[in-house]
Image 1 (cartoon, rainbow, N blue to C red):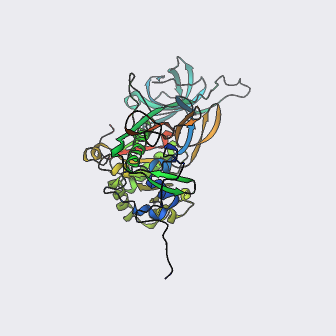
Image 2 (tube, helix red, strand yellow; image 1 turned 90 degrees about the vertical axis):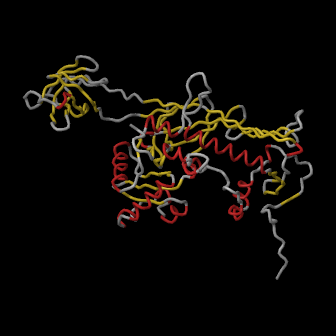
Image 3 (tube, one colour; image 1 turned 30 degrees about the vertical axis):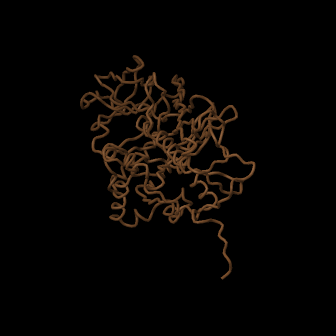
Length: 446
């Protein structure tokens, strides 16, 4: 057998002595997992930690498209629906009182329903922004609507005689403006020089890099803090460093919410119907905790191949094997494809996997796949449903700013090494009405 001089020793790294003239600083620090991913992927399974790597990251990397921003907040505009539906309209005789501005004009043809009785009517006159008079188009009086409350389809039709003047009703499509705010997150690591873990130097195609286990652990924790903040953080009240509105609170404010696990075809069918009502997306990713994934597995095992084998794998180049390789199980129900995967953040026993948080916590976050058109900076642009934005400015990018002070960085008076991690970020949800948050508890959302 020929002599086999291995490029890596038993630690899994290509060890070199400290290179002459190279200072260990923030610019050439590398963490162990990044090294293995970029240069030696075969080593990733060997990176053993007693309770795992401790990382709860994953969601941001799979879902969010990254981009930058340069102000203290970001905003975009979304145009609402075309049709004008009025709910909970009170009826007294021929007088209709809407809880919101009705945006109707005399001559408009409307549809009226109390859930049992449906009538077509014509708007005779406008009393105020919320009150109008209408008469039934069958020439008879309106029936006694149940509870005196109806729904009204305002933009239904109209009818004019030959030679009549044009309608005086003009519609301006005023967009809804949504904002999110910048969030500054910091985490330091400090150790005395004599207690500092030894540096390990490794050679890469981009020159020597140094690695330190304790700094890496703090770096991994910092990444976890960013992930959790982006997803769950609730903007604080005035008087605090208020911060970002996380993905889950945004969906709870502007999207869809549900109670208890999705555990049968009818549950998925409800999601499919809501998706058809809310927008154009027909492909969704469900990031789920263990019991939700188990419920979906049991559901898929109980249905025929029409459901289990008919999924559209567009986001995985129409490949079932690719979906499975990335950890997604897919099901097609009523025109909607749902790709489900485990989300370790929800199962980590030191995070949302704690017993109390499982009781009250998120069982699944369902995210639409693809892009949609929104207005940003006065222009119509295509945006992913979810974007993660990192602050730039002054020649710097604050996605993950790392500063090292002490023996391996900027000199200071103390006999210590201090590593500062800082990130400034926000997120942007376009089409939040197509997202869904599912809580495992019954009745969590009243």
